[in-house]
Image 1 (cartoon, rainbow, N blue to C red):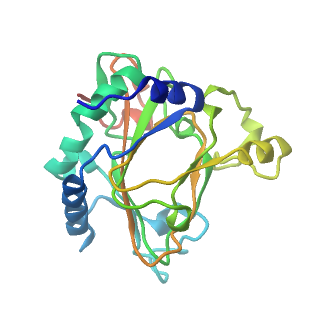
Image 2: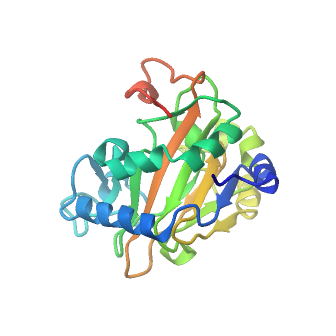
Amino acid sequence: MAKLSTQQLENFKQDGYVVAHSLLTADRVAQLRSTIERHLSPPLSPLEFEADVSYPGSPESQLALGGQTPRRLLSAYSRDPVFRELAADADIAAALRVLIDSPEIMLSQTHHNCVMTKMPGFSSETHWHQDIRYWRFDRPELVSVWTALGDETIGNGALRMIPGTHKGNFDRGRFDAKLFLRPELKENAELINSAVDCELKAGDVVFFHSRTFHAAGRNATDKPKLSIAYTYHAADNCAIPATRSSRFPSILL
């Protein structure tokens, strides 16, 4: 069983994210891509369109040019056995038990749990944010797992991270109405200037803390970018009742 090295564990502790290179084999990546392509042609519900988010680069509506461009295939865990197998992957689960410091790990079916797509021509830009800003749990200690199914570069909208931000406290005034960092503020601009690119190869997996600031640009290439994202939490870190986070039950690995 593959394990994160001592240095990787330290990187996660200090930076709020870590990359595990080549965690998935080429055959497994091909199987996942093939399944996703079936779910995209035609696009199978539930899904989110680029037009739904109104981010920079998004079509104005689903009726506009490019308005039917998928952004996310939702409910990945229940879509197909290959997605369930990835969600419960033994290597990923073993890493999460260490990163979250809990013997019992649960998969959130409400947050992430999706295939992330960036299609040529109509993909959008996601500004700087912390995922925990939108989630409601007893403790803000969740870890997301992002699996690359092809090369992820700045040119096709790869993730960018601001190391160490999972350890900070940020006043509400530093965020706009949609809970993105306000880049015009000096303190935010300085923070953004410390960002690093998180470029990946097919089969690479990124583990990142729910409080780590991250962003992603548009896909400026002529090929789709496909990734899978899941979010996990300790079994004793529960979603707060009557919030969006409690909409679907979590699954014990």
